[in-house]
Image 1 (cartoon, rainbow, N blue to C red):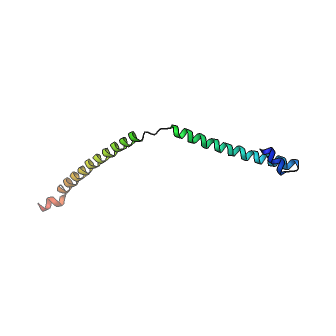
Image 2: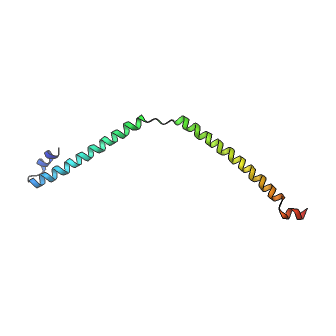
Image 3: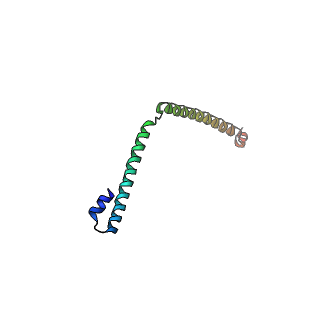
Amino acid sequence: MGIVFGILKSFDAEGLLVYTFLITTFFYLFSHIIVSMYYKTTLGKLYFFPKESHEKRLDLFANEINKREKIIDSAIKITDKTAQDNSPSSEKSS
């Protein structure tokens, strides 16, 4: 392709070489892009992502985090209550 376009576009040897090089480089890079996109899409379709099992595991983790947050909140309430009951200001008023 590069030689054909080079002959059609140029009438001297230097122009023929420049056009041949530029057009050949363009088609070479263009074909690499097309092949890489094809390769990427065909391999991408072969990969299977286990969505259902992944969502189940994420739900399990979210439930565990919620349980632990409730435990921590109750522990904070208990420590706040005991700290309030044992504070020096509460002993003086009694």
